[in-house]
Image (cartoon, rainbow, N blue to C red; front, side):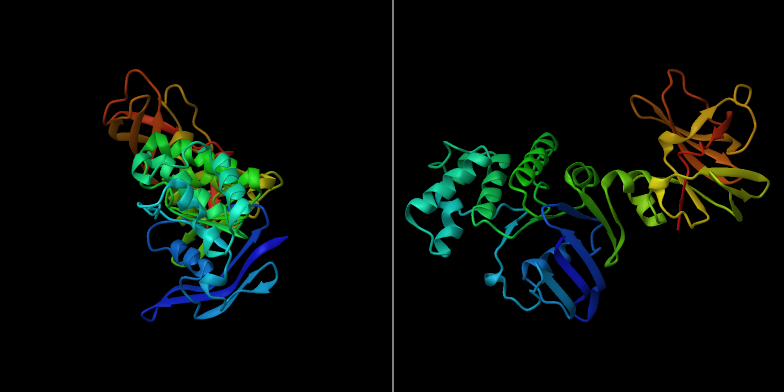
Length: 353
């Protein structure tokens, strides 16, 4: 059951459309991430839901009720900002209690809810401290506690971990997922960090220029992107444009110039309507022509550039179908100008629009 629905939403800044005919549905109790490059409309979507901006057209429904024109102070939503936005002169206890006091909650009920939520975010015993006495991760947990203590219908995160160092980000995203699952609260999460979104989300929406290019489970998007934009955004760097394609029982056969390629059909890929193949650098098999046999899905090329990555080497290989990037673990690298054969495994090659 969808808790939140955006229907044909349009938002404009200074007559420039940021979102146009935008649609989104979020199931109750799930965590969905909005992911994409700067300017794609993800933060605008979050701010629209929060009530900070109004839609030019369209409808926002929450639990079947029309929230399109409901003012921000009437929306019982928790919002976690990138900058924490804590009150430096208030103790941790009073920071967390702030929203409850605005709602006229007091006495034993206020104290119970504050202490309970501090326990959930692992900050029991920190009640009398002030924000300046906490680490970045602890301050972010205070911000999360403050958003949760009001028992919101919806929890919104806007780039919440971007101010933290790499190790702390990993720990905090695990904490956010734990808390969200423990409370079963419907959550929208905005980030530009692919790994962050994929690791904590039930679904990810990849956005581009105000539209959702693909919405699905992280594993489905990671393995089977539907469009070239999504493929490039999640790390596919090698593309082949085919001239013809033919459907067979278990595979799709494609041709370009004198080369033949096949793509394995797989139920989880859904419809594969494109004629452009995409494959990751790690999935291309590379070897010497004397060792690898000639055949479908393969092409000979020459090493143009080699780069040492630590555990592996990355090569740019020049072929008659263009340049391809390949990662290969090996002790002794290939030399620039050396002839190699590339194999594009049919189960790793995906078709995108």
